[in-house]
Image (cartoon, rainbow, N blue to C red; front, side, top):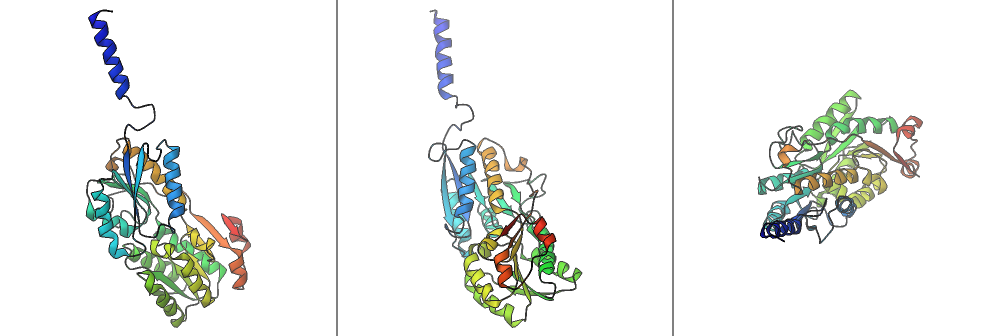
Amino acid sequence: MSRRDLVLAGGMVLLSAHRPSRGQPASIHRVGWFSIGTEASASHLYAAFTQTMRDLGWQDGKHVEYRSVYADGDTSRLDGLARELIGQNVNVIVLGAAAAAYAAQRATRTTPIVMAGVANAVGAGFVASLAEPGANITGVTSQQEEALGKLIGMLHEVAPGARRVAILLNESNPVHRAYWTAAVGACSSLDLTALRVVASAPAQIPAAVGEIVRQQSQAVVVVADATFQNQRVKLHELMQATGLPVAYGWREHVTAGGLLSYGVNLTATYRQAAKYVDKILKGARPADLPVEQPTKFELVVNLRTAKALGLTIPKSMLLRADEAIQ
């Protein structure tokens, strides 16, 4: 073999040694999992996200490792947890709550942040526009504030005699003003009275339920909020004791015993978020990845709860329901 052939052969060997296998990342990347809740309350979302990552070729410990932080419902910890993730040199942060998104945004303007169903992404200032996010944040926005009006309408279908509707809000959620505006508009169009009730931390929920009763509410709407979702079992127990019909923004509340829900499927949004993470870890910039909106909102009703409350779910609603829990 000539000297030229030896040089060429050696070069090909080196090239092959440094070329990653097709479809596989070349090194281990760190993905930050940033949850406002507890590890238990978010376990189904974490499972959906990591399984989708594996489906996309990212094997745990081989191509990717996860650094998880949980606020356990305490929003005062969010800024510190965001800095903790940045200090661990994560390549991307995944989160699903607006309060967590604000904390991450304050902590970094360079590390990519992927939203999994954060509501009102443009109005809250997380992205410049859905088509052109413009900075380090992208992902899926839930637009739950737009679904809230329909949720109130559905509750009215089930309990038409309820004229005073309590709206449970979390003022630590940056989207709470958009929620309240949407709720007032929807109630006004149905000639209902919207009653503002606030619980901005888990410890405030029992008092808020007491306030719902004190204001002589006849029905309740619990907006889509991470704190309420994380406290869904306790919240349902408290609401059940009031004997009032309660509608929720997310299906997890209905599987815990709530009456009905209308909103995005959280599990699906985390699967979609994994696809964003996949693209970013392969070199895409968040600013170049348009924010997606849900293509489907799901209606879930709990027939056992309706029966216990003495309510009948209209047949028209059952026909359009995505799931009816027997």
